[in-house]
Structure formats: structure tokens, C-alpha cells
Length: 254
Image (cartoon, rainbow, N blue to C red; front, side, top):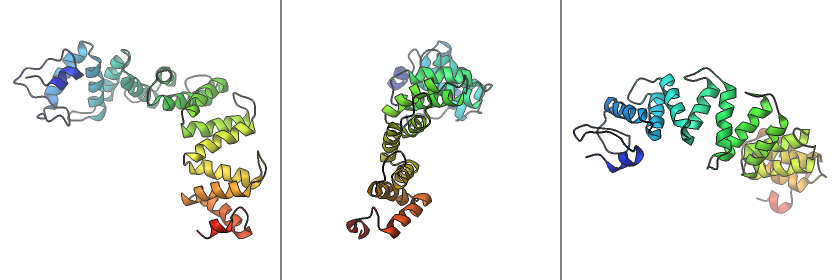
């Protein structure tokens, strides 16, 4: 009897009761060659999940010889039907040149499609698209478009995008120079535990860049970065402790 989960995953899937079929973790007997046979039959009928699954099998070489050209073919078939996971794998393979010639322009096309969709990973795709526009990969360099996508990702909480947005505000790339906003977004990233951002924020307050000197804030951020093993933060924190600034006695006693 055909397992119900197979029907759910691959509508129209063909499998005789005497056959065996394996998907890891589903408790069936392993027979990858048989699995491949029936998956390909289903995929040829444009069953998108079967196409994506074939892409994964050929990409990893699980139970069969690895074949990235075939993986690319099936991911592309699924991606063209709107499967977001396949779109991501296709974009990644185009970007890296796996299973096909490296093509940043086509990779950007698929990453941008993903960035325009609402998903748990949309911030990642938005940030990545922003970086491609920033670096001019697959497109002429465009700071305005880079700023647009990176800001969207930063607003969703992507710490890397927040750091990059701070950098763009500092340099006036795709926007006017605004050191207040640069510090705001850098602090946002630092508050998520980014040691480099914590160091940068601490140094800004320590040196009085972008804002007035604030040794208490400097100590707070440098201390957080130092606890993560950041050697530069540890050095600056040592100077604060030596001079007794930004380090109230209640803090030093801890």
C-alpha cells in the first residue's frame, strides 16, 4: 500500500505495493535506485516536490553517484514552478558555478525573486541582493538599490545588514551621510551580540567620534566585546580600567 505521506509529498506518485521506497527517516526499506526511478517518473509529470527532491538527491549523492548537472536541471524545473527552496538552491548553484557556468546575473534574478517573497529567510535574501548591488555582481554597481535592500533586511533584524547599513550611512553610499543613524544601526547590531559591532560602538564612545565622549557607554560595549574574546576590545578596556574612567566601583568589584 502506498504510504499516505508519499501521496501528500508527491501527488500522482506511482508505486506498486510490491516495490520498496526509501526517504530517510520515514521507516521504509532503503532502495535508492527504485526511489530514483519513481521520483523521475513523478518529476517528468511536473510534480514540483519530486523535482526538488531529485535535485537534492543528485546534489548530495545520497545513495547514487553525485551529479550536479542533473541537480541543477531538476532544481531549475522546480524553481520555474515557484518552489522557493529550489529557487534558493538554483540561485546558489548559479552564484557558485556548480552544475552550470557561473552566472551572477541569473543568480541575482533568482535571489531577487526570493527577496520579494515573504518567508522566514527573506531578510537573508534581501541582504544578499543588497550586497550584490553594492559589489556590482551580476549588475552594474548601484548604491541606491543596495541601500534599499540592505535597509529592508536591517529592519527585519539581520545583524550583518545592520552593520552594512551603518557603514553606508557613515560613507553616504545610496543615502546622505548621517552619523547619528550610522551609530543607531551599529548599536542595533551590537545589541544582537556582534563582537565587531560592540568594539566599534565602544571605540566611538571612547574616542568621541560621531558623538560626545561617553566612557560609561564605552566601557559597557567594550566589556561585552572583550568577554567574547575580542583582543582589540580587551586592550581598550584595559586602558579604561587603568585610568578608572567609565568603570564605577560597583562594576570593578565584579
